[in-house]
Image (cartoon, rainbow, N blue to C red):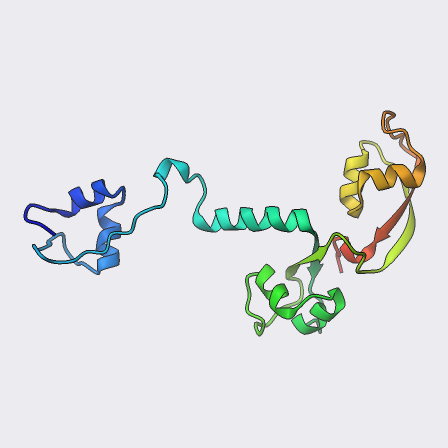
Length: 186
C-alpha cells in the first residue's frame, strides 16, 4: 500500500466492500499502514453480469448438462436402502449418486428423503412396461410425455396419432414406460 490509501478507496477501485476486505485480511478496525499487504478479492466480470450466485450458476450449468444427456429420476428412500444398494439398482456409482445429491458417499441416508438419480437417455436401463393410459381433461402429449418420461414422437408412433389433432378425454394410449425412470412415491 501507499501513503494515503484507505479501505474505502481500495474497495471502490476493486468493486468490492470494506467489510469483505476486512474479513479476508482479518482486520479488526479500519486502520491500514503503508507497506502492508492486503488481499483484495475481485470478480472475473463486472457485478451487473452476475445475476445468480456462484452456487446457482454451477447448479444451472450442471442441470442443463444433465438434462441434455440424462433422464432425471427421483427416488424416495425406504427403510433399509443404502447408497451402495441404490447405486447397484440404478447401475451408477455410489460416488456419482452422492455427488448428485450433495452428500458424501459414506453419509447416512434416511427414509423419506428424496435422492436424485441421473440415468443415461441413450440406453434403456430399467424395467419397461407396456401400459394403457386413459387421457384425462387437460392432458396433452407433452404433459403425458413428461409424466411418463417418454418422447412425444414415441407416443405418436406407438398410437398412430395425428399431431395436429387434440387428445380427447377417455382416449386410450399405449405407452412403453421405463418404470425405473419415473418418479417413485414408495
